[in-house]
Structures are given as C-alpha cells and as structure tokens.
Image (cartoon, rainbow, N blue to C red; front, top):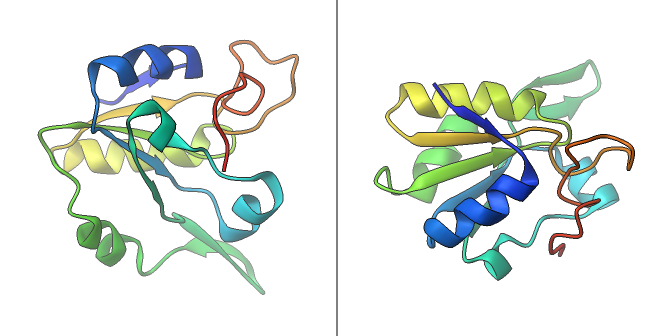
Length: 130
C-alpha cells in the first residue's frame, strides 16, 4: 500500500532516494496554468503523464496511460513519488503502481493548494518549479 507523504517528507526522502521518479499525473491544462515541478533539482527523474484527460464530455481516464507509463521504463528497484493537484488522482495512480510492484509514495496536497493548507503543497512550499 502506498505511503502518504507531505512535500516536506518528499524533500527529505529524495535525498535518500536519488534517481527515484517523480510522476506528475495532472492534465496538460493544469501544467500549462500552474506550472510543473522541477524534480531534477532534487535528483529525481521527473515524468509527466496525465491519468485523466479533458474531453468535451468531462474528464476521462487516459487510454494511453498504461502504454506511456510502460514506455518510461521506470525502475521497480527505485521509489516512485506520485503527485497531482491535490492528492486524489495521485493516490489512485500510486495504488495502481503499487499493485504492479512499484514502491510508491503519494504526495498529499499535491502541486498546488491554498497557502493555509497544512501540510503545504509543492508550490507553496517553495520547491523548484519549471
């Protein structure tokens, strides 16, 4: 079962797990509007893969998610930190990866949240952004 961590804990764990993967599962529109985490500055292999995509009928599961994920060839011997906007989609993806044999962590509160939320998120914690 994936462990739930804060951005502060991710920062500490990234020091122990250099070369781990940071997987951001938000949508293209969210990346365009809010920016992207720069995990490279923390020694993380950063990947961007939408779990849900926006359509005329609302958000649906990305039918290319599995294929694209496999193409990343993420090392199962290293941990994967999964994040989204608030921690809900990433929780689902972290569970999926965990079931496939990856050691996963879900980043609670995700990339962006209001500044009064504790524990804070990536962006309000001042972590590096692209």
